[in-house]
View 1 (cartoon, rainbow, N blue to C red):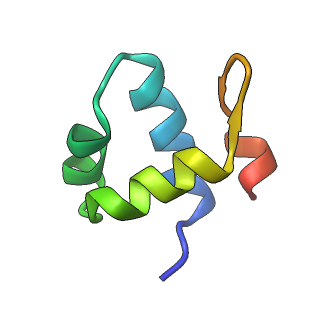
View 2 (view 1 turned 180 degrees about the vertical axis):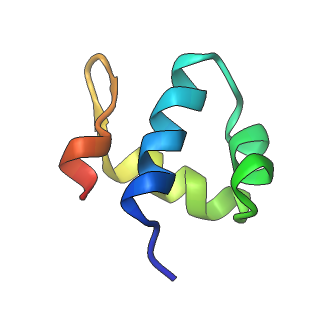
View 3 (view 1 turned 90 degrees about the horizontal axis):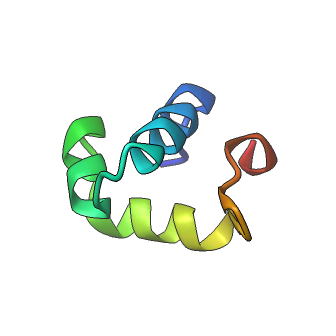
Length: 54
């Protein structure tokens, strides 16, 4: 199941607040592996790129 634009925005915000992948997964009701893959695919030098992911 793909992440929605809103979920990607939430990942960006939570990651910026210092949340771990496991905490983000729990907050979104997703598996940690889904969050891990999303962050890995859309990582930029200065952090996660929610806009690019969409």
